[in-house]
Structure formats: C-alpha cells, structure tokens
Image 1 (tube, rainbow, N blue to C red):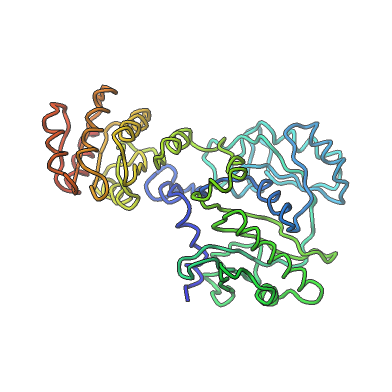
Image 2: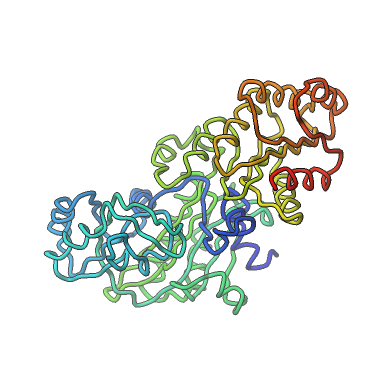
Length: 431
C-alpha cells in the first residue's frame, strides 16, 4: 500500500512543473511557491460545479463592483457574511492590498458594511505568501454565508498510480495543513481505493464517513456528500478533488467549506465548458502563448534560455546550469514530436525574454530526429537574426546529420559533445 505522503502528493505528478521550477531554480522566487493546477479555477467556480452536482456548499453571490456587492448582501440575507477576494493563491486571509487594506477574507454581521469591504478589495492588488511581491489584481469578490464549524475533517479523492485509479483520502483533522498532519501522525490518514469500473458503493461511502467520525444523523449526510463528490470527480474528469474542511455546522448540516479541483488536460475535448472557465488573468502571457503553440514553458529569472525535449532532461539541464554557476531563464520542453516550426516558435519565446543573454539547446533524439531539430535551429537563427550566444548539444537519432547541418551553417553556434560541456559553455557565454 502506498504511503500516506505518496497518496497526498500524487496530484503533483499531474500538475505543471511551475511550482517546482519556481522554488528550485529561481533565487528571487525561491520563497514564493505558487501551487499550480493544469486548469486553474477560482474558488467560486469550483463551488459552483459542486453545487450543480448536489454537493452542499455555502450560499454565495459574486460581485465585481461595490453596487453588486450591496445587492449580494441584500439577496443573501444571512446572519453573518464572509467576503473573500478571488485570486489563484492561498493565504488570502493574511494578505495585504496595494491600498493598505488588510486581509483578503473578512467577516461581518452588518450587511451595510459589505459594500465598503468589497470596494477596498476590487481593483487593488492582493499580496500573500503565495503570490509575487507585486501581488495579484482582484477583479471579483465572493460574498458568502459565513458558517460556524462544529466539526472539521479532511476529505479528498485523487488519481493514484499505486492503486491504478481513484483513492479516497481522509483525516479526522481538517482545516489544517494535511501534509503536516501526515508527517506528524501518519496513522490518522485514511485511504480507500475505489474500483473505477464499479464506482463508489454505499458501503464504502458509509465506511469513510464513519472513519471520519461522523455519527448519528450526520453519518448518512456525510456518506451522501462523499458519494456525490465521487460522482462529480468522475463526471468532470478530475485528477484531484480536495475538501478542507469537510465538516458539520452547529445546526446539523454537513458542508464542504472549501474546494480545490484539478482536471485531466487530456479530457479537454469532453469538458469544453469547464476548460472555457479557466482564468488566465494571473498566468504569465508567455505560458499562455506556449500552450497555444503546444509547448511547455515556465518563465524564471535567470539569464540562460533552455530549449530541451523532455521534462526530465529539462530539469537535469537546469540543475547542471545551476551547478556550474549559471541561472536558468526558463523551463522549455518542446516534447518528443517537435517540428521545425515548433523549434522556431521556441526561439521566439526565448528571445522575447529580456533576461535571456544566451541560449542552450539540449536535445536527445529518441522519437525526435536530430536533423529536424538542427534544421529548425538554422531557420530560427536566420529568421530571427539571432545575436545571442547559442550552445547546442545533440545526441541520439540521426545526430551526425544534425551536427553536419549546424557545422555547415556558418553561424556562430558552439557545439557541445557532452552534457557537462554544454552547461559550462552556456554559463561562460553569458559571463
């Protein structure tokens, strides 16, 4: 059976490499780890999907202006309101706005104060421990019913290779960092695999609810919510669904208080409506453009632009650059089936970054033909009129033909015949 931490981290395999790249290779961003999902949905969007799936969530109304906030407060008519700035980062409650306003999450029992709170949030940048120092502009605010929590648990469903399918993960300790809980008290982590063909059974849902310590009338409620969450997980092609906390209210309701959903990019053709909801306002425009071009790109702040095929090779390349005193400017994986046009597109991305002072191409020809890559490099250099130092290391399929193309180009390309040599040449070229 897979270890608790392996289960809890399984979703990291399914997300982009942005979080790892930011923390591992970027000196300035090393303290700013920005979790990223393949598809980024705001909190209110995830809650709307859950609500549509019959899952119990807080009542909420969205506002993009103070007037809409005032109307939202009037419509909700609840005992207490929680006002939450909508950005794709955690730590909102302890964040600070560019206008000096403190906190991206506020509570009030006075509906007349909702408008003023929202006005202080909208249009201003919110900085948290998970954003850059510049913060993120808030364009929408969620005005929701504030609920007291009588009991907090943790519940998630993830796709896990160790189980060849979905696994329910739970803990009696909710509302806290679940990975920290798993480290300190691994026995408190509950795991139950679900047969993806059969689907979740009533017995499984009740068993999970019991292990989360739901009792009495709450037991059946919790089991029903767990079943609906699983059905939603399958329906929307999710790779992770996390509810923290999953709990009870003093008046006897079982509610999903917060939600995070990850989706399978390969299912986009089935989930067009969901993918159209993606908020790219907080995404690096270069990453958006790269995605359009079928490239995998993550911008960093170093000076050596990297063009590599394969995520593992990309990471190893950035590691060895760092080892020899350089700083990678990006993670750029052109994939195994790269074409000449994609090589050109990749060079366009790299040279558009003012931080880039030199380029390292490190390609292993497994599926890809080295001659194709070499021709793409040649055409890109000519069309862009490349002035930056360029180091190229080619190995694998048709490598001799690829090297010959570059040698006969009469372009000032530095050829490298080893991994370490390529890194040393690239670092030296920018110093």
